[in-house]
Amino acid sequence: MKKELLFHFKNPHNSPGYLLGQLTMLWQRKQKKVLDPLNLTQTQFVLLAALGWLSKKSDAVTQIDIANQSNADRMMVSKVLRTLEDKGFLTRQEHQKDTRAKTIRLTKEGEMVLQKGIIEIENADLHFFETLGTKLSSFNKNMLQLIDENKE
Figure 1 (cartoon, rainbow, N blue to C red):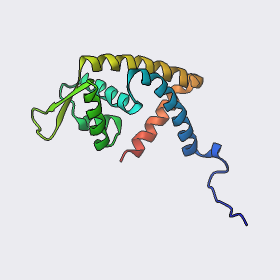
Figure 2 (cartoon, one colour; figure 1 turned 60 degrees about the vertical axis):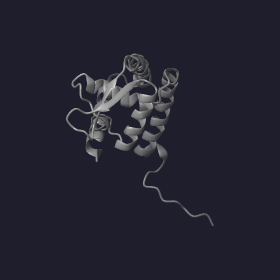
Figure 3 (cartoon, rainbow, N blue to C red; figure 1 turned 90 degrees about the horizontal axis):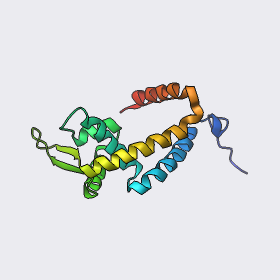
Figure 4 (cartoon, rainbow, N blue to C red; figure 1 turned 90 degrees about the vertical axis):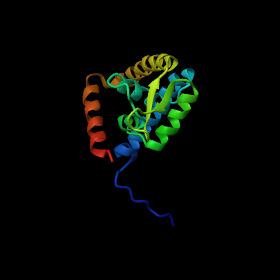
């Protein structure tokens, strides 16, 4: 006798988590396609982009700043930044005021690869989300609401 599994949702198309997972996998595939030629993973790009945004406002960006900006785990950020440093895309130096912190800066090569990545990713995003048309702004607002309400 087959046991009947109980689901809250009638089918996968009614499950927001399932749909978000499906959408995320499709979106990540598109991201991978444009980032592979730049020798970047999606996570590496996100952290470089966070560094790029933060560097516009401060010369003393730390790993913690990058983790907070990207909603990423601090240990993971540290490991990925080491990889990006090994690739020559950034430098990590002792912070002038806080000896426990590292100041992170893009190198010239890092700036170039980030700029190429921004162009590629923004074009890929525009293409991926173009079907939403005028609903894109509302979609973004809903995502921001979910992000804000679910930060730990």
